[in-house]
View 1 (cartoon, helix red, strand yellow):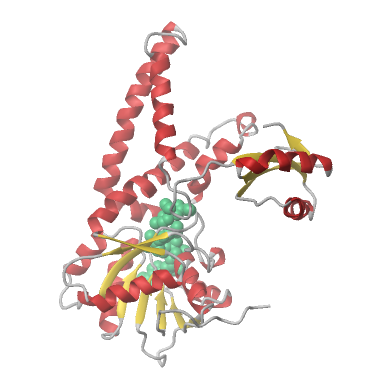
View 2: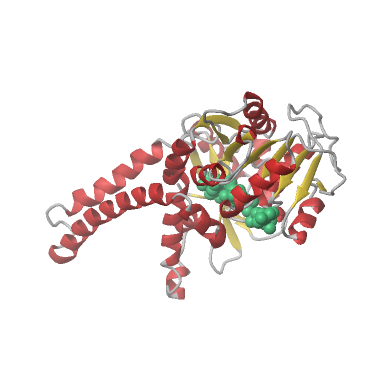
Length: 374
Ligand SMILES: NC(=O)c1ccc[n+]([C@@H]2O[C@H](COP(=O)([O-])OP(=O)(O)OC[C@H]3O[C@@H](n4cnc5c(N)ncnc54)[C@H](O)[C@@H]3O)[C@@H](O)[C@H]2O)c1
Ligand SMILES: O=C(O)C(=O)C[C@]1(C(=O)O)C=C[C@@H](O)C=C1
């Protein structure tokens, strides 16, 4: 049963969404759930119909009420053209786009004639998935995530406010920065990780089956986003080429140092002069960098204990595990599932606060679950 829409949004509709894929449909779902009227437009009639069918809004028609806010959620290489069209079509509306790069789109818009750019606010929710299209959309996609809102001279304060309200209504935290600051930041925290995941996964293309059969959670963690859409990501990466190049050159320097140490170990043995320090330096820097990644709600990442439980690969077993953890009175902070190759069993890795780990292990064992030793 659908919950009644709770009409508490600060965003005044109608909101028109152009590009009804993962981002557009997620925004539509989040706004529709709060009773904001949403219309959807997409170059693909199929994408448009799918977004409507998942509940993201109504398909746009020429006789629709004029929107107060237009959200452009198309790939970055066409975003400026679409934003310009919307600014011209709706002279009273605020127009935002959610593309993953910001400077290149603004530069394209500035180069166009007779556009009222005081109503355009480039933005970027730092939330997404490795899958495209409305079928993967979720109203909760933005909850607890930063939503970058780019600022610059000449912006109408009401336009800024409208896009801030959109972010807040969808549960995100607005963060203001210039387009250049945004592009530098995402080159490091989003675009470089995508490339590293893709480069690592690309090494698997010709890997022997026997090696792939040994793959554990480490490989899965590092390669989740390697499933991302090549067309979308090519546009993102080339749209932020200079900043991405800077970080990749940094990685290249690190790789050169690493290879030098490895080559020494390969020739003179594992304890060759400088070899151990070379490895430890890279791994320690990784520890320090990872420790700086903020937790999902903005605070410092908490260190949880992991309790690993074998779960039979049968309907309802995972649900039973969750129910019993609830009965034991322990809160699940995070959860991952690891699948054992060629076995009818999976490993549920349940993250809990350290003080609860032993209690949970003992209680689950008592209830007949097989807990894997930490
Ligand atoms: N995928 C993510 O994780 C993520 C996260 C944050 C921001 N973004 C940005 O959001 C935007 C949309 O990404 P997505 O993941 O939703 O992609 P998507 O492929 O799921 O959806 C894009 C939609 O835009 C439509 N489209 C393409 N050109 C169009 C045009 N000229 N006019 C109208 N519709 C057009 C496509 O048919 C498609 O339905 C991109 O700019 C992307 O950089 C993506
Ligand atoms: O979680 C993911 O799938 C993402 O990679 C989302 C992610 C990110 O790098 O954080 C990817 C690109 C977008 O521009 C914003 C968010």
